[in-house]
Length: 111
Image (cartoon, rainbow, N blue to C red; front, side, top):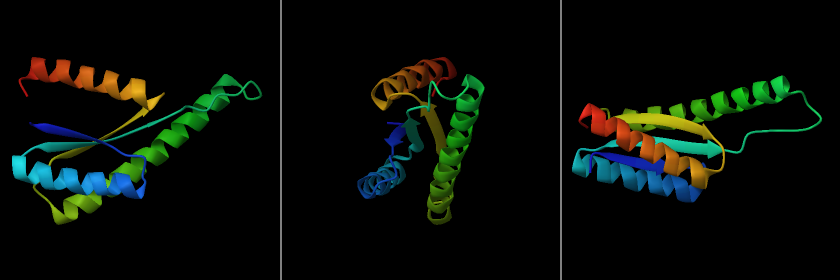
């Protein structure tokens, strides 16, 4: 295994899964992807551009939150390779699409 995808909802159980994934990544010399998906805000009462703006702001906040986790991990494990990713949409669908997209890219790039 070269890459471990670690979905998080920022809960305590998700933190435990992240810690376990860190141990596995160190053991297997694998990289980590910290992943989160959220349902985008949509309302008939707001304009599409206002909804889009709110979703982009929310995505940035979530990326910042993942970056904070990433930085905390790297302080203790500087040799670990960690990337972060946020998707908009139902997590069950988005995580599958993300994995398929990553798999196809890694086949091309030789990972």
